[in-house]
Length: 105
Image 1 (tube, rainbow, N blue to C red):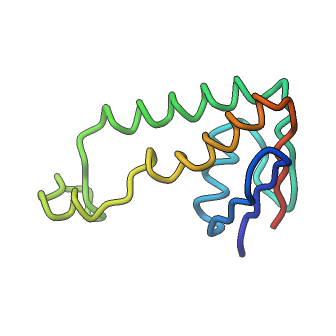
Image 2 (image 1 turned 90 degrees about the horizontal axis):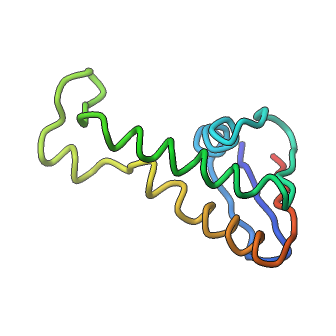
Image 3 (image 1 turned 60 degrees about the horizontal axis):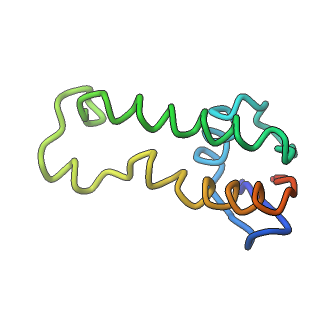
């Protein structure tokens, strides 16, 4: 399943279900079939995503076994900062134009 985020201020953004669900949950929304981040809610959504990124970066990197990640594993890992960057940009553009962001699966 895919999450498709849409805004009149930016190009569509498509994510795989686990990452889309994670981002929706981090914003305090209920993951599911469809939803909306209103223009008024965008600043809070950006703040929540940036706080989650900061919290993840404060933790030591671990691998799937729960052990400290090697240098190679760190280089290969896709961090939350990388996953949310395009979405935060969509939110910023939408806020600038005062338009909502919607999603559907």
